[in-house]
Length: 195
Image (cartoon, rainbow, N blue to C red; front, side, top):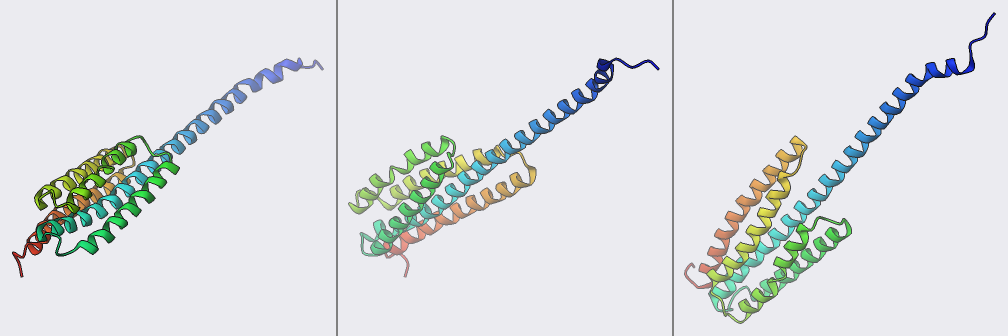
């Protein structure tokens, strides 16, 4: 009986081994792509959550600043000081989280804008702004934050997550409209126009 040469049996395995290597590299590539997508989604979610937390505190501070200015400092001053401390705490907490997670550079741009708060607060304390001017400055910052959140949410690729994020952004915009009304009401109350 004639023996088959040693290399012939091995050559027959070559297509099988090649197919397994190709299939394995494809699966690994898909897993790495999925992991990368999950990490990007997590970074965007972290950024969006932080933006919304900061927006909430700024909305509260804006309303109280409006009331303080409209009243000539007679009402809401101690509440405003406490709110400023809370705003600063949330900004510091969110900033630390963004830095720990290496959130995109968009966060750095937001932090530059948020750094202007000190100047606005000094103007409110000195009563060198009207309530309307203070509201306009806070609103510009809130709008910039919400615009950034909308852009970041638009980059989400999972349909369900994108829809949920869009709903959250719609809620944030509605909350902003109500916040502006509260700020106007605080100004009217502070000025003694409503009893």
